[in-house]
Length: 260
Image (tube, rainbow, N blue to C red; front, top):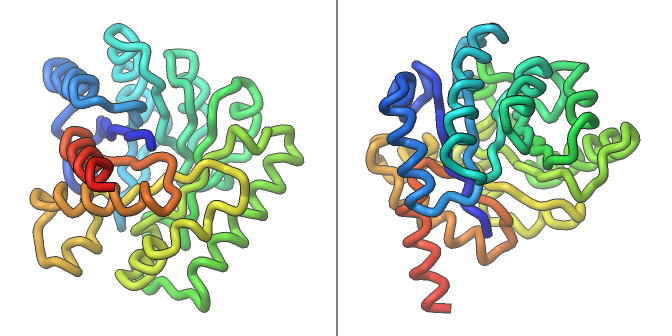
């Protein structure tokens, strides 16, 4: 399983907003991700936390393009651009990004499919009920696993119809994106149920609010449960985990692998 390290170049992300918005702290964070063993670096310039306000493409580009260029000057690791905007994805790829991570599953920007078709990298599509502005108001499902799988099937069929090979698609069930505590736990208990599409599966659970609800711990103390869940989902079929603390996650995986 691969570890995707999070690099948020935003002032308002829920756990690390504002930490990596100048060159010195940005370079330090990139070095940390590389040193701790990240397999992929995911760069985001717009917060998608609950109730987050959107930012315009110009501002997002100012944040992400220098960060991607800095990574490229330091490493050949795969770089994912976390955006819903086609213009941002296009410029990020030109700067050196090799993957697209779109929480809207290519639904928000009709031009995103053309960007996806313009390069050969992987495309991560996520399930989200609602939008970041309203997704946590009152999420409801009859069967959360079945409904996410129906959504994935529709998106995969559409993308294949547009010429995107299924092998390039990575699925993300969207922990915390329009999900209650019980929805999130149900998804994590049923990771293998999302493997029938023939696509890689990404789990993005790092420091999420359900840890606070379940364990009554603040954001700053959620890396250890993140590591435990990472080790759990590796055993049930996840191909990638997207995390803030690459080092702690790596140690958790190492320990569980040694015990297996």
